[in-house]
Each structure stands twice: as C-alpha cells, then as structure tokens.
Length: 208
Image (cartoon, rainbow, N blue to C red):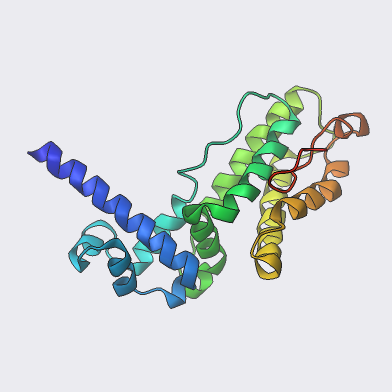
C-alpha cells in the first residue's frame, strides 16, 4: 500500500511539473497562475501545495529539472562532442517544452524573485567537462581557461537563443548557434582542429 502511494505521488508530481512547464512556456512566470496549471494538469490545489508549496516552488523545479529529458550525443572523445551537444540543444529547444520553459524561467527569474543561479553553474560544468576532454586530446589552444570559456559559452548560448526566440520563434536557432561557434572557435582551438569540426545545422540538413 505504501509503495502504491509513493508511485502515485511520483506520478502526480510529474504531471504537475509537465503541466507547469507548458503554462510557463506559453505565458512566462508572470502570466502563469496556479489555477491555470491545475486545470492543465487535471489536479486539485492540494497536489501543488503537497509537492511544491507555491507557484515559485513549481517554477524553481522547472528551472532545475529542465534537462531531465535530454539524451546528449555520446561516443566521441573530442571537441566535436561539445559542438554536437550544443547543436542537439538547439533542436531540443524547438520542441522540448520542459527545457524551453526552464530556460525561459531562468532568464525571467528576476521577475519571480527566484535568484536561482545553480542551473547556469550546472550547464557551465557540463561544458567544462567536455572542454577538459578536448584538452586531454590536444585540441585546445594552450592559453584556454576551460572554466572561463564554459561560463562564456553558457552566456553566449543564452543570449543567442533569446535573439532567436524573438526573431523566429527559435526556427533559426541551430544556424545561429553555428554562427556563434564560428566566432568562438578561433579563440578555443587551432586551425587544423577547427578544419575538421562540423558545425550545428538546421534540422533536416546534413552537417558541412
């Protein structure tokens, strides 16, 4: 019986998280309401306050769990892995509601007073790990600071996706990320490494 209740509680939390992500993605933090989220989830107010306590708690969960559905490209041990990750994220941002909502809330969190920086640190650490692998493979320029570059990459990616959202509802995000890399790569890797890298491309197109 206790196990059944636990399974039910986990499912209820998941339903709430997904419904909240849909509403936050559509309306942002300010435009979302607990009632609208409950209506989308088909649940009562008690479920929200049991699992998340408030709309702020729901928003924080969406921010921190934005990457749970992601399945990053695997199998490479070079700088191409990092480019493939960012290209994959660009495509996911076009249709992954939880990721999109989490990113939107992370950008808008000043409105909500959340002050949740941990997710930026998480992304920076993921990128830093890939840069360290590339360093071990001799692909980075000697003076590159992996931690500082990872922080820069998070900032550049965040700004690029915002511009893409405003401009084309992220339809051109993969192409914009490719443009970002064209600017960043000369500060990261020597020319002979860059020459063999494949930049992110729009969905349905082959890498060049």
